[in-house]
Image 1 (cartoon, rainbow, N blue to C red):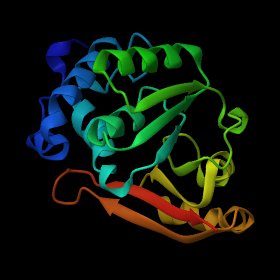
Image 2: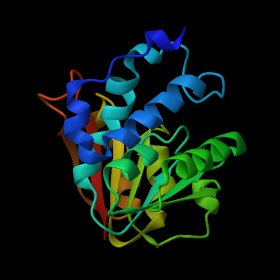
Image 3: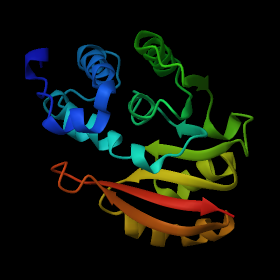
Length: 210
């Protein structure tokens, strides 16, 4: 697959990123050029890179609030880099255990001049930063039963999980009911984003730690 097969920028991109659209374009270009060779995206992702990945993450930006946000398993920078572009008023820590992905994330932070981002090479359970974050995000990391124990301990009291999930989000919540109680989560809900903007909506499981 060649760069000529990269999905054209959807009209919604400029709407979602505003004056930061230039940075989003730079990130999309870098991911398109190097993502497959560096094991960050699959070989069939270029024709849907904007809609399936970048804008899928960008619509989550309004759920964030100024403070410190941890992105667990940041990988290619989805959603962490995208959200940091969209929300320069929020500080992000991208948490990623794999060295080659950490290298990529640091390269992108520097290339894009993202002063609101730091990268931490660690598994979520080994960050040493429990109770520090006002919000924690994650995308395509694991099912909720495993993901909640990885993310909830990072939150300060009254902190919030903002976890991107698929169409089975409600069923995942049901399956994780014991874990939800063990980690004292309340106000657990599925938020649907991007309706009328994206062809495929984004689903977020949002919950607050007591």
